[in-house]
Structures are given as structure tokens and as C-alpha cells.
Figure 1: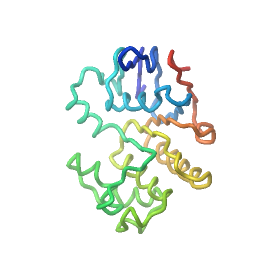
Figure 2: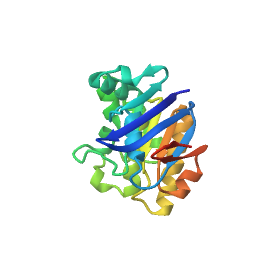
Figure 3: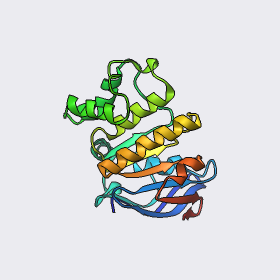
Figure 4: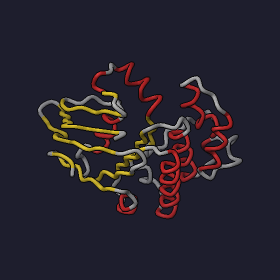
Length: 214
């Protein structure tokens, strides 16, 4: 298993967000997580990335226990092994497209212009590397986010409502890119979504409730 979660629980004060969450995701597998609004889907994804703390249970990625790492250790681990695609894109407006995609490689002190160009081509943005984000459409910006999340060849790709701001046609194209690139790299993909169309593409669809996941 690339990702193994056992008995995970998260609370805010006396309120339980979720508990008894256990799941495994194999290399190259695409798992979609669905559930009611407010049930903690994005919080669970943030826990998988080591961005949020949890109150019980464990998360392992390729045998590394996240709960055994401090905040600095988690940040370094995340930088190397995890890619994250957000609904709101989170591209930096003062950097051009190629520079945005290159950020994970620069943070790892592994600049690789050829890899950046290959990712631009892979997501259908060849020739657009010098453009600024404000010169792109929403669908193109989401492709930039996908390329940035995958450029450093992460073992785990997490996507939080990546098609939520897109029209159905553009959303389908973005999902095509996301799936194709994850299959090509062998990354495990965990997608949180309200979209039935996006969830239908997954190898497995899991339903998160306050009492667990199934």
C-alpha cells in the first residue's frame, strides 16, 4: 500500500468531525471520497497531507508514519512525496506558468527545465509557459495546478474538489489530464468531490460519515 490509514479520528473540542476512518490506497489507484457537506472530507485530505493534526489513529505513506514526524518533518516529507491540487488553483499570480509548475522542484533543490516542459506538454499547455496566470482560463489554470502537483513525481496525489469551479466540459478535460498523468506516474490518487461525474471515474468510491468510511 502507498497510503494506509487506521482508526483515524478528528475532533474540534467536544465535536467529532469523523472517527474510525480506515482505508488503504495502492500505487496507481484512484479513490474518490464523497459525503455530505461539512462531514470533514477536506479535513481528512489535509490530514493525509500532514497539513492538519488528528486526535487518534495513524497514517502511513510507503511505511513512513506521519504521526512520528514533527511539523518540520511533515513539511519536508510532504514536499518530497505529496502533490496537492486545490479547487481554487492557488497559482502565484506574479510567476509565469512555467515558474509556477517548477516550484516543487525548486523547493527540493532539483531544478529541471526539461521536466517542466514535459509537464506543460503532458497537460496540454505546450507553448504557454511564459504566460501569466491571469492570461489563462479556469480550465487552463487547473491544468497548471495539476502539472505543479505532479512535476516532482510524488507517490501520493491529493485533489480537493479540483473540478468544482469548472463547467462540465472543462471539468471532464481536467479529469482526463488528472487520471492520465497519475496512471503514467504510478501515483496513488485520492480525490474529494461532490461531482458524481468525477467520482464515477474512480476505481473505488468511499463514503465518509462522522462514524467512519465505507
